[in-house]
Amino acid sequence: MRLSWIASALVASTAVMAAPAVDEVQIAARATSGVNDYNCKPQAGKDPVIFLHGLGAPSGVNWFTKAPIVAANGYCVFTPQYGSVNQIWFGFASMRSSSKEVAGIVQKVLAATGAKKVNIVGHSMGTTVGSYYIKFDGGKDVVNHFVGFGANYKGSTLYGVNALVRTIPGVTPALRAVCASCDEFLPPSQFLTDLQAGGVSVPGVDYTTIVSNLDQIVIPYTSGLLREEPAVTNIVIQEQCGLIPDIAGHLAQAVDPNVTAWILWALGGKQGKIPGCIPNLIPFKRDDEFILDA
Ligand SMILES: *[C@@H]1O[C@H](CO)[C@@H](O)[C@H](O)[C@H]1NC(C)=O
Image (cartoon, rainbow, N blue to C red; front, side, top):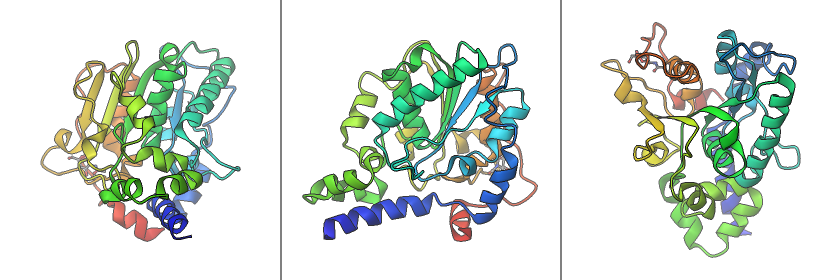
């Protein structure tokens, strides 16, 4: 009783943290037209882009800004919902099964578009699922560029929640029963151990990982850095942006134009210098302001 309450509270808090504001849902319905078009034919040198959303996020909301911008830059863009359990879109399925689901989605996109490779852009859970798919479920042969932001290859200790869950008897299985991916995110977990063993990245795929040192969900934020792996470009948002800091935390990276510019740079094969940050004219919302809106 009590244990399942702890598990549900944990799941609920994760979902609330990722809950979108209502106006964003409405924007999402409009802005993603032209995306998810299986008749789209890729331009030369522009492999289709598959966006993988975060835990608790409806895909249309997660990608309402970036998907149309990347599509407007000439890419065929797809924003699948994945990891649902009983048709509920929170993304509570095990990330191992989500990885297999992504493998199916990639095959469908390749078949429809005639492309030989795809690019993957992931936010949060999309970084762990995407990189797991590349390493274990066939992605290494068909993924060209992989870009992840709000990345968390080493999971998140979530203010010590991991220690609680692992210490109190019965909590780990209770959490796993409600939300397998939540359990996998809390170190130590076999999923994270497998993902990290011998390095997250695999040769032949171009990786970019983007993190914010203001991330409130990925703790520590360095969980998403792979500095010791040569195939990976590591970007800490605030180190890249100068005097006027970028205040995006975990959620706001989904709408941060600075992050979008680096995604386009990576998808384009990293030509020239990495783009500088784009100064804001309108004050930007911090993550806690997004949450208050919801
Ligand atoms: C992007 O970086 C610039 C320069 O540091 C900054 O002015 C702007 O606010 C940043 N964007 C966001 C969303 O924080």
